[in-house]
Image (cartoon, rainbow, N blue to C red):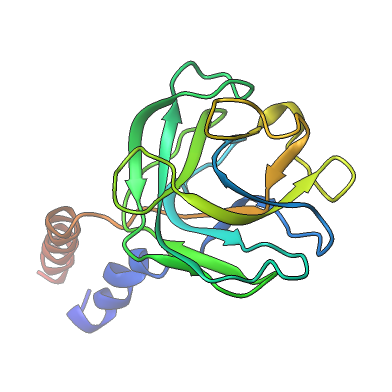
Length: 204
């Protein structure tokens, strides 16, 4: 096996596509609120694409709800008791590598992540913070409810700062995208060298 034929195989692992594992779209007519929030959600079966890549959050989607707010960092935590109907942050999974500003009504702002592995059928808690990790910041968010496109039901709930569910049937308009983890450079190098040696042995 010649090296030039081997290289495409070696680098194929880095050409990954994202999978949207959760999508609660903005309905364009849902409620909005200024609140410190925690949004819980439950994953289904994720499969091999289990590394957190992006979380998109919709800004408030009503008239006069377009005040610029932020910058915010998006954080994803495990849920402390594994119950989507109660609030409680467990362990920090990952924080976005960029900050978002909610500046346009109905627009989606995207936080990007470079790490954090998600598990199947697990409850997570999503927050935005303005500098203090684990402390939700005040923001104006687009919401969806049972009559405005909400889809989470018992698998998730939006909470206000005082640990109370927001209207009991509203959730944040957001989505979560994952990708397949890229092998660590050392592992990829070892795999590459191993394949190269096998190719060289076959040539002899």
